[in-house]
Amino acid sequence: MVGTCAARRRTISWIARLVSLAALAVQPACVPARMHPNPTSREDLPLRSGTPSGFGSKFEGNFEAELRAAGPADRFRAIVDLTEQVDLEALGRRLRSERRGKSYRRRAVIGALERVADRQQARLRPLLERLQRSGRLDYVRPVAIVNRLVVEGTAAGILELAQRPEVAFVLREWTSDRPAKRAQLETRPARTPGERFRSWAIEQTGADRLWAAGLTGRGVLVATIDTGAAGEHEQLREGRIRGSRGWLDPVEGATAPYDSDTHGTGVLSQAVGANPRGRVLGIAPGARWAAALGNYRNRYSRVRMTIAADWILRVARPDVLVNAWSNNESPCADFDLPFISAWKAAEIFVVYPAGNGGPRSGTGEAPAQLAGVFPDRGPVFSVAGLERWNEAARDSSRGPSACGSPGFPAIAAPGSDLPFAFPAGADSYGLGGGTSLAAGLVGGAAALLLEADPELSPDELERALADSARDIPPPGRDDATGAGALDLVAALDLVRARRREAP
Image (cartoon, rainbow, N blue to C red; front, side, top):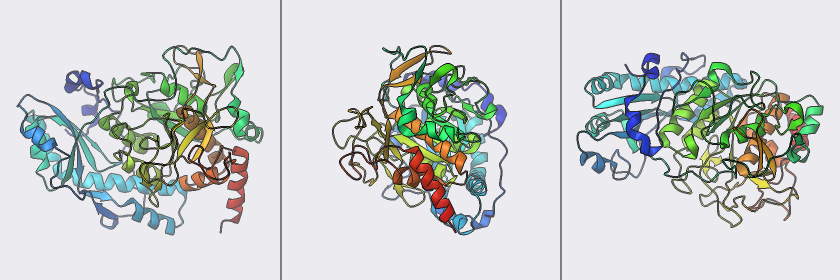
């Protein structure tokens, strides 16, 4: 069977053959029953072709030649995109014209993506089941964030699947062969913040003043795709994870959250740390959280990211998503753009770190320095790092974007000498820096603003954060700090003023 819960719980035999590529073991959680409470019928959904322009075959690069030269025992992972894809731009315009609420728009977008995927993937099901019975495909994972199948099997099986008219394009798996550069969080932190501490980011961003006004992120869900999260750390525990829909491990299939590195725990603590026992570092201590282990041991994988992205959209369904990772396949790798557009169309505020490649100019990473996302093909929202003295952190990546984005980086937030939760124990901490931690702070800031105004769209949040940012010399937008430093007090004032003025 393709895509059944029972099949998803099986131990996947091909895992053992992939140890050299970060040991990807896909044991996904079951996706809830489809929800289709939206106005777009099957016949009325706006579609676009999934066939990429400028390619002479259905295969990426020399992947077809590689498959045809393979032996019968060779196994490959592939990503199979189908021809029918939801036109998110057109759907978004339609939903905006109807003046529906945010939760309605979210359900409509997710429902549209699922219906299109269900409809076309169903035509392939008999073939997929036959290929699995014959042993030519070992594994099939359908997703809906893009109308796509993730498969593993023989070259013959993948080539036969590619012949179907429903198939638009076949991509190979790609995974980094070494950990990507992230925030400077060491396996054992060289410095610790002491028994009691208060992050300088709290006052610097104005979070303390929003707390005084009663805003802590209550009712808001913040998610991460990262190296995981230490669910037993005192900053993250006490029932604040989103229950059974708050954790995905597509590698080892663990049901309890853990961190495969140290990075994810540190970043998430900046956003939603509970600040217990005078250990104050989280911007939105009242928010709940979810986490997908999409960057196992800080290594990027197209397959893992596809599975994590789909789970975030359809299962976790957060209000804020902190993506503290980069696709280091190339500086302008655009594989992740469809995910970002789908998340934003589904009313998820998405934030990325600018990267840690500074101080030279033009040192951005993908996807942070990309443009072309929903709703108007604008820039990805990215965050630079600041030192205590309100200057750009030396290692923070600078623009201009090598990929044509006019808004890289978007804003800046504290990114050095920050206390962070460390997964060595329930009360373990370190001091460090990096734009990933800065992005976590902005994720928490977004949660505070969403508590104040839950109807804020991702674009409205982006504009409010950028338009209210405190300018950092030189005057005006610059390639080091974007629009300037995160200023939550000014952002909240701006949000309230704009809402009063709204028709």
